[in-house]
Image (cartoon, rainbow, N blue to C red; front, side, top):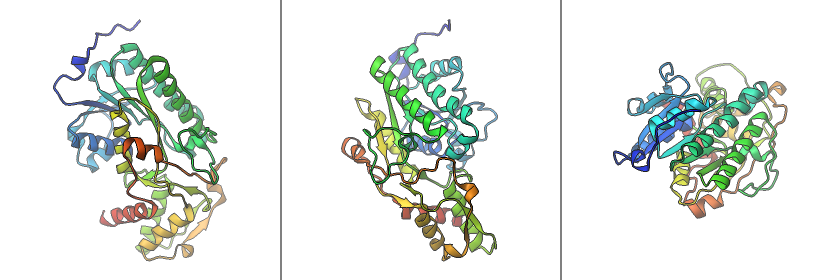
Length: 334
Protein backbone atom coordinates (compact mmCIF):
# COMPACT_ATOMS: atom_id res chain seq x y z
CA UNK A 1 0.00 0.00 0.00
CA UNK A 2 1.40 3.39 -1.01
CA UNK A 3 0.71 6.01 1.67
CA UNK A 4 0.34 9.51 0.28
CA UNK A 5 -0.75 12.86 1.70
CA UNK A 6 -4.24 14.06 0.88
CA UNK A 7 -4.42 16.68 -1.87
CA UNK A 8 -7.23 19.23 -1.95
CA UNK A 9 -8.41 21.50 -4.71
CA UNK A 10 -7.02 24.51 -2.82
CA UNK A 11 -3.60 22.84 -2.81
CA UNK A 12 -3.77 22.30 -6.55
CA UNK A 13 -4.53 25.92 -7.37
CA UNK A 14 -2.40 27.48 -4.65
CA UNK A 15 -0.58 30.51 -5.97
CA UNK A 16 -3.23 31.45 -8.53
CA UNK A 17 -1.56 30.41 -11.80
CA UNK A 18 -2.57 27.13 -13.33
CA UNK A 19 0.02 24.38 -13.07
CA UNK A 20 0.68 21.92 -15.89
CA UNK A 21 2.75 18.76 -16.03
CA UNK A 22 4.01 17.65 -19.45
CA UNK A 23 5.40 14.16 -19.95
CA UNK A 24 7.68 14.04 -22.96
CA UNK A 25 8.49 17.73 -22.50
CA UNK A 26 11.82 17.33 -24.30
CA UNK A 27 10.14 16.18 -27.52
CA UNK A 28 8.97 18.55 -30.29
CA UNK A 29 5.32 18.66 -29.19
CA UNK A 30 6.22 18.86 -25.52
CA UNK A 31 8.57 21.77 -26.09
CA UNK A 32 6.12 23.77 -28.21
CA UNK A 33 3.34 23.05 -25.71
CA UNK A 34 5.52 24.21 -22.82
CA UNK A 35 6.18 27.48 -24.68
CA UNK A 36 2.47 27.98 -25.33
CA UNK A 37 1.50 27.34 -21.71
CA UNK A 38 4.17 29.71 -20.42
CA UNK A 39 2.77 32.40 -22.71
CA UNK A 40 -0.65 31.73 -21.16
CA UNK A 41 0.71 32.25 -17.66
CA UNK A 42 0.99 28.64 -16.54
CA UNK A 43 3.56 27.27 -14.16
CA UNK A 44 5.02 24.46 -16.23
CA UNK A 45 6.61 21.22 -15.03
CA UNK A 46 8.30 18.86 -17.47
CA UNK A 47 8.79 15.20 -16.69
CA UNK A 48 11.69 13.10 -17.93
CA UNK A 49 12.89 9.66 -16.93
CA UNK A 50 16.09 11.23 -15.58
CA UNK A 51 15.71 14.99 -15.44
CA UNK A 52 19.22 15.56 -14.07
CA UNK A 53 20.86 13.79 -17.01
CA UNK A 54 18.52 14.99 -19.77
CA UNK A 55 19.80 17.75 -22.05
CA UNK A 56 16.40 19.29 -22.92
CA UNK A 57 17.89 20.53 -26.19
CA UNK A 58 14.55 21.51 -27.70
CA UNK A 59 13.63 23.63 -24.68
CA UNK A 60 16.96 25.41 -25.06
CA UNK A 61 16.32 26.00 -28.77
CA UNK A 62 13.04 27.70 -27.89
CA UNK A 63 14.74 29.76 -25.16
CA UNK A 64 12.54 28.43 -22.33
CA UNK A 65 14.73 25.88 -20.54
CA UNK A 66 15.21 28.07 -17.46
CA UNK A 67 11.47 28.69 -17.20
CA UNK A 68 10.51 25.00 -16.92
CA UNK A 69 10.56 23.04 -13.66
CA UNK A 70 11.86 19.58 -14.49
CA UNK A 71 11.12 16.43 -12.52
CA UNK A 72 12.24 12.81 -12.87
CA UNK A 73 9.41 10.36 -13.50
CA UNK A 74 9.16 6.90 -15.03
CA UNK A 75 5.76 6.44 -16.66
CA UNK A 76 6.13 2.67 -16.47
CA UNK A 77 6.51 2.85 -12.67
CA UNK A 78 3.16 3.45 -10.96
CA UNK A 79 4.76 4.60 -7.71
CA UNK A 80 6.90 7.11 -9.59
CA UNK A 81 3.80 8.53 -11.31
CA UNK A 82 1.93 8.80 -8.00
CA UNK A 83 4.79 10.55 -6.27
CA UNK A 84 5.19 13.04 -9.12
CA UNK A 85 1.50 13.98 -9.13
CA UNK A 86 1.60 14.45 -5.34
CA UNK A 87 4.71 16.60 -5.62
CA UNK A 88 3.63 18.76 -8.57
CA UNK A 89 -0.11 19.00 -7.82
CA UNK A 90 -0.95 19.82 -11.45
CA UNK A 91 -4.25 21.19 -12.69
CA UNK A 92 -3.56 19.73 -16.13
CA UNK A 93 -1.43 16.81 -17.31
CA UNK A 94 -0.37 16.42 -20.93
CA UNK A 95 0.86 12.92 -21.73
CA UNK A 96 3.15 13.26 -24.75
CA UNK A 97 5.84 10.76 -23.74
CA UNK A 98 6.66 7.32 -25.20
CA UNK A 99 8.33 5.79 -28.25
CA UNK A 100 7.07 7.85 -31.20
CA UNK A 101 8.45 6.25 -34.36
CA UNK A 102 6.20 3.95 -36.41
CA UNK A 103 9.17 2.43 -38.20
CA UNK A 104 11.08 1.78 -34.98
CA UNK A 105 8.04 0.10 -33.44
CA UNK A 106 8.47 -2.85 -35.81
CA UNK A 107 11.95 -3.40 -34.34
CA UNK A 108 10.91 -2.63 -30.73
CA UNK A 109 7.27 -3.77 -30.39
CA UNK A 110 7.39 -4.64 -26.69
CA UNK A 111 9.07 -1.39 -25.63
CA UNK A 112 6.60 0.52 -27.79
CA UNK A 113 3.56 -1.18 -26.26
CA UNK A 114 4.81 -0.71 -22.73
CA UNK A 115 5.87 2.92 -23.07
CA UNK A 116 2.64 3.99 -24.78
CA UNK A 117 -0.12 1.90 -23.20
CA UNK A 118 1.28 1.22 -19.71
CA UNK A 119 2.37 4.84 -19.33
CA UNK A 120 -1.11 6.13 -20.14
CA UNK A 121 -2.71 3.55 -17.86
CA UNK A 122 -0.47 4.49 -14.93
CA UNK A 123 -1.39 8.16 -15.29
CA UNK A 124 -5.11 7.38 -15.44
CA UNK A 125 -4.95 5.04 -12.47
CA UNK A 126 -2.93 7.55 -10.46
CA UNK A 127 -5.50 10.27 -11.09
CA UNK A 128 -8.27 7.87 -10.08
CA UNK A 129 -6.38 6.77 -6.98
CA UNK A 130 -5.67 10.31 -5.79
CA UNK A 131 -9.23 11.44 -6.56
CA UNK A 132 -8.26 15.01 -7.39
CA UNK A 133 -9.61 17.23 -10.21
CA UNK A 134 -6.76 16.81 -12.69
CA UNK A 135 -7.54 17.25 -16.38
CA UNK A 136 -5.61 14.77 -18.52
CA UNK A 137 -4.71 15.02 -22.20
CA UNK A 138 -3.41 11.91 -23.96
CA UNK A 139 -1.57 12.00 -27.28
CA UNK A 140 -3.39 9.75 -29.72
CA UNK A 141 -2.41 9.10 -33.32
CA UNK A 142 -3.95 8.95 -36.79
CA UNK A 143 -2.01 5.70 -37.24
CA UNK A 144 -4.81 4.03 -35.26
CA UNK A 145 -7.12 4.39 -38.26
CA UNK A 146 -4.85 2.42 -40.55
CA UNK A 147 -5.37 2.88 -44.28
CA UNK A 148 -8.36 5.20 -44.76
CA UNK A 149 -8.37 4.99 -48.56
CA UNK A 150 -10.63 7.65 -50.06
CA UNK A 151 -12.60 8.15 -46.84
CA UNK A 152 -11.73 10.93 -44.41
CA UNK A 153 -11.44 9.64 -40.83
CA UNK A 154 -13.29 11.38 -38.03
CA UNK A 155 -13.95 10.56 -34.37
CA UNK A 156 -16.45 7.82 -35.30
CA UNK A 157 -14.17 5.97 -37.74
CA UNK A 158 -13.22 2.46 -36.54
CA UNK A 159 -9.57 1.79 -35.71
CA UNK A 160 -7.64 -0.64 -37.91
CA UNK A 161 -4.05 -0.30 -36.62
CA UNK A 162 -1.34 -1.78 -38.83
CA UNK A 163 1.83 -1.29 -36.80
CA UNK A 164 2.95 -2.02 -33.22
CA UNK A 165 2.95 1.74 -32.63
CA UNK A 166 -0.65 2.08 -33.84
CA UNK A 167 -1.78 -0.90 -31.74
CA UNK A 168 -0.24 0.68 -28.64
CA UNK A 169 -1.83 4.07 -29.36
CA UNK A 170 -5.21 2.42 -29.91
CA UNK A 171 -4.92 0.65 -26.54
CA UNK A 172 -4.10 3.94 -24.80
CA UNK A 173 -7.03 5.66 -26.53
CA UNK A 174 -9.50 3.09 -25.20
CA UNK A 175 -7.94 3.26 -21.74
CA UNK A 176 -8.69 6.99 -21.70
CA UNK A 177 -12.23 6.47 -22.96
CA UNK A 178 -12.94 3.80 -20.35
CA UNK A 179 -11.60 5.80 -17.39
CA UNK A 180 -13.55 8.83 -18.56
CA UNK A 181 -16.79 6.85 -18.67
CA UNK A 182 -16.26 4.57 -15.67
CA UNK A 183 -14.69 7.01 -13.21
CA UNK A 184 -15.76 10.40 -14.62
CA UNK A 185 -12.15 11.48 -15.00
CA UNK A 186 -11.66 14.59 -17.13
CA UNK A 187 -9.55 12.86 -19.76
CA UNK A 188 -9.38 13.12 -23.54
CA UNK A 189 -7.29 12.03 -26.51
CA UNK A 190 -6.17 14.14 -29.41
CA UNK A 191 -6.02 12.01 -32.56
CA UNK A 192 -3.32 13.98 -34.32
CA UNK A 193 -2.39 13.45 -37.94
CA UNK A 194 1.17 14.12 -39.13
CA UNK A 195 2.52 17.40 -37.78
CA UNK A 196 6.00 18.62 -38.55
CA UNK A 197 8.44 21.16 -37.13
CA UNK A 198 12.15 22.03 -37.11
CA UNK A 199 12.41 20.15 -33.80
CA UNK A 200 11.56 16.78 -35.40
CA UNK A 201 14.37 14.19 -35.00
CA UNK A 202 16.39 13.50 -38.14
CA UNK A 203 15.05 9.92 -38.39
CA UNK A 204 11.64 11.21 -39.54
CA UNK A 205 11.23 11.28 -43.31
CA UNK A 206 10.27 14.95 -43.55
CA UNK A 207 13.48 16.03 -41.82
CA UNK A 208 15.47 13.57 -43.92
CA UNK A 209 14.07 15.14 -47.09
CA UNK A 210 14.64 18.75 -46.01
CA UNK A 211 18.15 18.04 -44.71
CA UNK A 212 19.07 16.13 -47.87
CA UNK A 213 17.75 18.83 -50.20
CA UNK A 214 19.64 21.49 -48.23
CA UNK A 215 22.92 19.60 -48.53
CA UNK A 216 22.40 18.98 -52.25
CA UNK A 217 21.63 22.67 -52.80
CA UNK A 218 24.91 23.39 -51.03
CA UNK A 219 26.87 21.26 -53.51
CA UNK A 220 26.61 17.72 -52.16
CA UNK A 221 26.65 15.01 -54.86
CA UNK A 222 24.68 12.53 -52.75
CA UNK A 223 21.54 10.72 -53.87
CA UNK A 224 18.59 10.90 -51.47
CA UNK A 225 17.11 7.44 -50.92
CA UNK A 226 13.40 7.18 -50.08
CA UNK A 227 10.74 4.51 -49.86
CA UNK A 228 7.24 4.57 -51.37
CA UNK A 229 6.61 8.05 -52.78
CA UNK A 230 2.96 7.31 -53.45
CA UNK A 231 1.89 7.21 -49.79
CA UNK A 232 -0.47 10.04 -48.90
CA UNK A 233 -0.54 11.93 -45.62
CA UNK A 234 -2.14 14.96 -43.98
CA UNK A 235 0.81 17.18 -42.98
CA UNK A 236 0.36 20.05 -40.52
CA UNK A 237 2.46 22.40 -38.42
CA UNK A 238 3.22 21.20 -34.87
CA UNK A 239 3.36 24.62 -33.13
CA UNK A 240 -0.33 25.20 -33.89
CA UNK A 241 -1.37 21.62 -33.10
CA UNK A 242 -0.35 22.04 -29.46
CA UNK A 243 -2.92 24.82 -29.16
CA UNK A 244 -5.59 22.22 -29.97
CA UNK A 245 -4.31 20.09 -27.09
CA UNK A 246 -4.75 23.01 -24.70
CA UNK A 247 -8.21 23.83 -26.05
CA UNK A 248 -9.37 20.26 -25.39
CA UNK A 249 -8.63 20.56 -21.68
CA UNK A 250 -10.50 23.87 -21.44
CA UNK A 251 -13.77 22.17 -22.43
CA UNK A 252 -16.10 21.51 -19.51
CA UNK A 253 -17.07 18.12 -20.97
CA UNK A 254 -14.04 16.07 -22.07
CA UNK A 255 -14.08 14.41 -25.47
CA UNK A 256 -11.76 13.15 -28.20
CA UNK A 257 -10.86 15.13 -31.33
CA UNK A 258 -9.23 14.56 -34.70
CA UNK A 259 -6.62 17.26 -35.31
CA UNK A 260 -5.48 17.71 -38.92
CA UNK A 261 -5.48 20.11 -41.87
CA UNK A 262 -8.09 18.19 -43.85
CA UNK A 263 -5.79 18.09 -46.90
CA UNK A 264 -3.95 14.98 -48.06
CA UNK A 265 -0.86 14.97 -50.28
CA UNK A 266 1.52 12.31 -51.55
CA UNK A 267 5.09 12.04 -50.32
CA UNK A 268 6.07 12.74 -53.93
CA UNK A 269 4.31 16.12 -53.70
CA UNK A 270 6.07 16.89 -50.42
CA UNK A 271 9.47 16.00 -51.90
CA UNK A 272 8.78 18.15 -54.98
CA UNK A 273 7.73 21.09 -52.82
CA UNK A 274 10.84 20.88 -50.63
CA UNK A 275 13.26 20.63 -53.56
CA UNK A 276 11.53 23.49 -55.38
CA UNK A 277 12.19 25.70 -52.33
CA UNK A 278 15.90 25.14 -53.05
CA UNK A 279 15.39 25.67 -56.82
CA UNK A 280 16.08 21.99 -57.52
CA UNK A 281 14.37 19.29 -59.62
CA UNK A 282 13.83 16.46 -57.16
CA UNK A 283 13.80 13.77 -59.87
CA UNK A 284 17.48 14.47 -60.55
CA UNK A 285 18.47 13.73 -56.95
CA UNK A 286 16.13 11.08 -55.47
CA UNK A 287 16.29 7.27 -55.72
CA UNK A 288 13.73 4.67 -54.66
CA UNK A 289 15.00 2.20 -52.04
CA UNK A 290 12.67 -0.79 -51.39
CA UNK A 291 14.50 -1.46 -48.10
CA UNK A 292 12.86 1.67 -46.69
CA UNK A 293 9.31 0.38 -47.19
CA UNK A 294 7.70 -0.69 -43.90
CA UNK A 295 6.26 -4.21 -43.40
CA UNK A 296 2.72 -2.75 -43.25
CA UNK A 297 2.86 0.55 -45.11
CA UNK A 298 -0.22 2.77 -44.95
CA UNK A 299 -1.01 4.00 -48.45
CA UNK A 300 -3.44 6.79 -47.58
CA UNK A 301 -4.30 8.77 -44.47
CA UNK A 302 -7.18 11.26 -44.72
CA UNK A 303 -8.81 13.34 -42.00
CA UNK A 304 -12.02 15.20 -41.26
CA UNK A 305 -11.18 17.72 -38.49
CA UNK A 306 -14.65 19.30 -38.59
CA UNK A 307 -15.49 18.53 -34.97
CA UNK A 308 -12.42 20.46 -33.75
CA UNK A 309 -13.63 23.51 -35.68
CA UNK A 310 -17.21 23.22 -34.45
CA UNK A 311 -16.48 22.54 -30.78
CA UNK A 312 -13.01 23.98 -30.16
CA UNK A 313 -12.92 26.76 -32.73
CA UNK A 314 -9.63 25.30 -33.99
CA UNK A 315 -8.59 25.17 -37.63
CA UNK A 316 -5.17 24.54 -39.13
CA UNK A 317 -3.73 27.70 -40.67
CA UNK A 318 -0.78 25.99 -42.34
CA UNK A 319 -1.07 23.25 -44.96
CA UNK A 320 1.52 21.00 -46.59
CA UNK A 321 3.09 23.62 -48.87
CA UNK A 322 3.36 26.06 -45.97
CA UNK A 323 4.96 23.36 -43.83
CA UNK A 324 7.53 22.49 -46.52
CA UNK A 325 8.38 26.16 -47.01
CA UNK A 326 8.78 26.88 -43.28
CA UNK A 327 10.98 23.83 -42.75
CA UNK A 328 13.22 24.94 -45.61
CA UNK A 329 13.36 28.52 -44.35
CA UNK A 330 14.33 27.35 -40.87
CA UNK A 331 17.23 25.18 -42.03
CA UNK A 332 18.52 27.99 -44.26
CA UNK A 333 18.48 30.44 -41.34
CA UNK A 334 20.33 28.04 -39.07
